[in-house]
Image 1 (cartoon, helix red, strand yellow):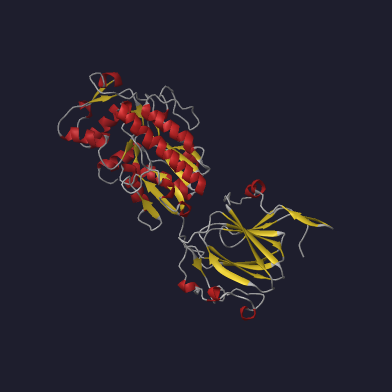
Image 2 (cartoon, rainbow, N blue to C red):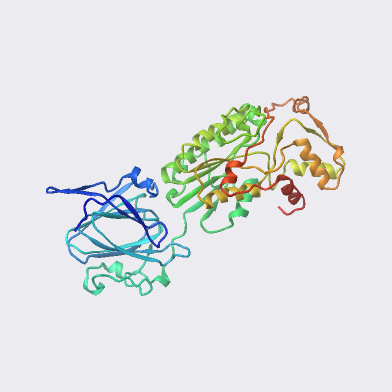
Length: 471
C-alpha cells in the first residue's frame, strides 16, 4: 500500500552513492500524484545533478518477475509507477566496497539513485508492476558492462520468492559468480598536452593506471572537426587540459595570434562543450597574464580580468568559457618551471659557463614548479573541492626575476653579484621582433586553495630541490 503524505527525505545506504528517497505522494478518491523527479529539490538534498537523457519503463505482468543483476557505466534514478518490487543492489565497482549488497522494497512512494557501476536487480511483488528509470547516457553496444548471477552465494540475496519459482531469462541465469565478475573501473581521466612540461608532471603524479589517457596533438587534435566523436566521452569523468600556446612574444605576430587563439580558445571551447554535454569535470590551466599587473597587492581569484597582450587575452577568453562548464576548475598560475628548457636551467647554465647576465628586476611574482602544480590539481579532484577558480603558485616571498637568478647562482655555488638587474624596457630595448607586454605584478593570493587543505610548497625550497635534481 503506497504511503501518502510523507515528506521528501533521504536515506543513505552502505553502498557509497546508493541513496534511497522517500517521495511525497498526494492521493484522493481519483488516484494519486507525485513528483517522481524534481531536480531542484532533490539536488538540494545531496542527489548528484546527474543529467538524465533517457526515460525507460519495464512493465511486468506477474508477481515474481525477476531481472538482473546488471551494472552499467551510467547513473540511474529508479522508481515504481504502479505495483511494488523487492530491489537488490550490489556494488560491482573497483574498490573496497566491491560486493557490498543493499536490499529494500520500492513502491510509488520510494525511489533510489543507483550510481554508475552498482549492479541493479529486482523482483516484482505485485502484478502489473511498472518499473521506471531515468539514465544519464544512451545505451551503447560499445559501453562496458558487468553482470552478477542472481543466485550468487557471496552476495547471498534473500529473495522473497525463491529463484526456482520465478520467471528469469536464460541470459540472466548465466551471469557469472562474484569471483568471476570484471569490476567496473572509475570514469576515465584524459590529460591533454601530455608531452609538455606540465603534462609530464601530471604523468608522474597520476601514473599509468588503465583509466588515465595521456594524449598529444598527434593522437587527439583539439581543434579538429571530429573531436566530439573522437572518444566515447561518457566514459570520462575528468579532462585536464595541459595543452596550450605559451609563446607570449610570438603571439603578437599575425601567425602567432592565429595559432594562440586556435590553441587557447577554439580548442578550449570544444572541450568545454564536450564537458558540459557529458557531465565531465574540466580542469583548465590559466595564467597571471590575464591581469595587467598594476595592482599593489596579490591578485585574488575574483579580481577583474585586464590582459595586456594577445596571449593574456586568449587565456582570459578561455577562462570565461570554462567558467560556464558546470563542473570545472580554473587553475591560475605563474612563472612555471618544469622538465625542459626554462628560466632556472638557463640561469644555471650561464652561471656554469661564466656568463654574467642582465635580468629583469621590475616584474614580481613566485615560481611555480610543475610537480607542485600537478599535485594541487590532483588534490582538488580527490577532495571534490567546490568548482571554480583557484590560484596555484609556489608560496613564499614574492621576488623579481633578478632575485630568482641570484638565488640560482647562489644555490649552484656561484657569486650572485654577477647578476645585473635591469628594467623590462631596458631588456627589450634592442629587440626588433614583437614583444608582449608583461604584468609587473604577477603575485597571486593563495588563501582560497589553502582553505581546501592544500599547502603550496615554498618556491625557494622547490628551487633547491629542482637544482639538486630531486624534482
